[in-house]
Amino acid sequence: MDRDALASLVASRLRDVQDFPEPGVLFKDFTPLLADPHALRAVVDDVVARYEGRIDVIAGIEARGFMIGTACAVALAVPFVPIRKKGKLPAATFTASYDLEYGSATIEVHQDACGPGQRVLIMDDVLATGGTAAAACELVDRTGAQVVAVDIVCEISSLGGRDRLRDRDVQALLQI
View 1 (cartoon, rainbow, N blue to C red):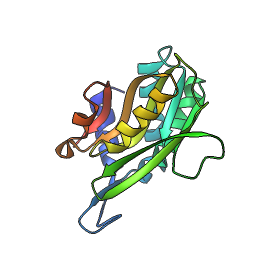
View 2: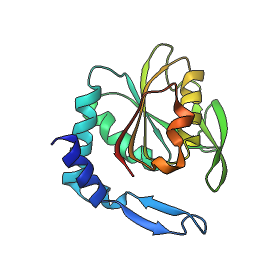
View 3: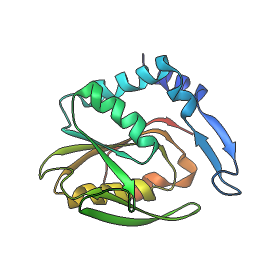
View 4: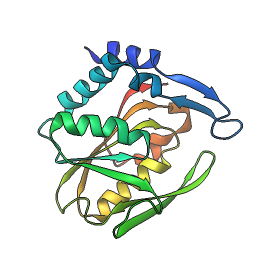
């Protein structure tokens, strides 16, 4: 499937949820995409076509990045690394804090999650202000691994998240 057709398919599988998780926020819910095996397979196939042989690890950002990232890691036969909210990982971690469009948060990765020189693809569902993705890149950098790209299903361009990732390769299937 070409990328324009795939972007249209993905757009048709997103649901807008007003005032979530806070009043005034329009949340882009991609669970309808997960419920459509044809659409999910098309997204996974697109990631495989673009990154096969180029990455050693996929790191997914909690929680929706886990879903898409794990599916892609299985298809690419590479390890999956979770980037989690603070306090959810049991071993020694690196920690990064950042601001969201509706607050602040802290995420962590195990210190031994990636090895020096490993090529890592960071995945998530939505790129909004870029704080989460920038913090995830910082965490992967701290492991000694190399961020190959940040791959997002949907980018909300008006929030300027790409600006916080200027020195990174950012790929978004759909820009709204």
